[in-house]
Length: 125
Image (cartoon, rainbow, N blue to C red; front, side, top):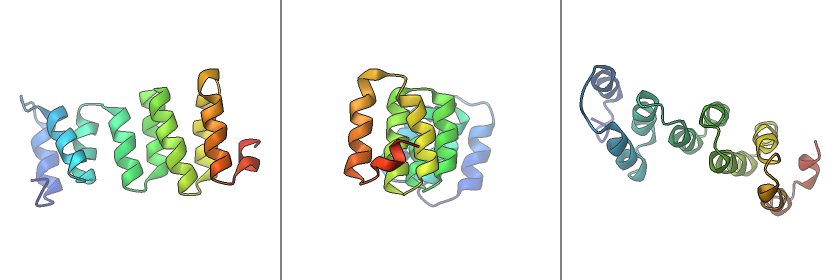
């Protein structure tokens, strides 16, 4: 269903109780760049870290930040921050940055991302 872009049918299949290995199917869809299908699957199993990555690949950065909030993982925050910087979504990148700076071990890396993007001033906001 994912390969032929029958997303409504896919959503219906995963919404009923089943024993499918949704996490594995979601991973496979993600690897095959079927991000919309992977998004549906990761929503179903509450895998917010992977969901955030799907949203990044779909250029849905606000949704990626929302998923990162639910995942509450430093690795996810860093991925979403970098994607938002690259997309020049600085307000969203700053939201992510606020969750990263509370972990001093990651501060230097965060600063480096902003400097490489030529956006040091954005870091101070």
